[in-house]
Image (cartoon, rainbow, N blue to C red; front, top):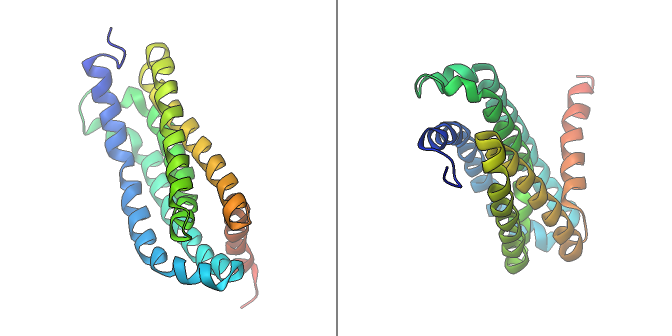
Length: 195
């Protein structure tokens, strides 16, 4: 067997991967709107960065949650569009949805580094996640096939979020995940306020 699996296994992975690529549409639309304000926010300090970031994170959270829900609920039907046997890989699709959901919510971390003048650290963070993913893929594919790919993607995204959080603390003075979690909590506060 090839290291990357059989032709059928590669087809199953491609079907799952094709479905989760819808997250990129949501990320691109929100990022295009938010990134134009990042440089100015950085110049105005952490409070302004928090405000701009909060808008983006709330939008990314809502869009990613809706996309995740639709894919998880209709995942088997979506996979069946690719042919018979694909629905057997529903669990791998759900793990990839979880990976892309987390990555989408924390998507702006790397953008903050780039727009604050720290492009090289942002690049090193992304490259380290790619390296982790490649190593995991060589270990996981022979053992777990398509499920191994899904788990490798999830772990590499979590690793990238951790690296970007450390880089944000080092270069920008705050943890990206703390800012994001606070922004998500604000959604609950706004909903609970009396009208």
